[in-house]
Image (cartoon, rainbow, N blue to C red; front, side):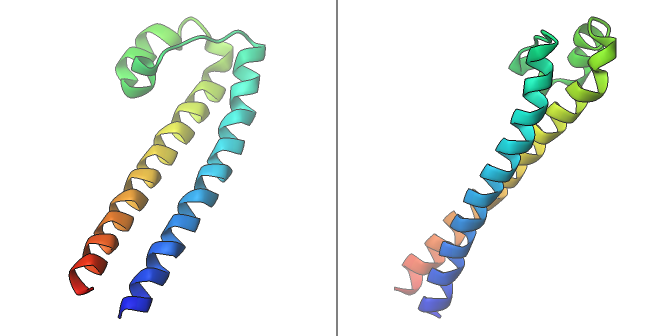
Length: 99
């Protein structure tokens, strides 16, 4: 049981690392296009879809698809990282309990 939990924690950590690298590449690809077209918005726009819809999309209608893709990648990578961190913490807690 102990070795299985250690293997799960290591596997989840490696998964988090590769997930981070994968989404970083995807996000940077879209980010380069947005920077090239001088699209500017803040974190509050990423976290608030209504604010993005009202303030950013009307200002950059030609880049709407790239902006939406960038925001989707950021949100998904954040959600996956949170899930993996919670799983690693949970398995670590179980590992400490059984040790």
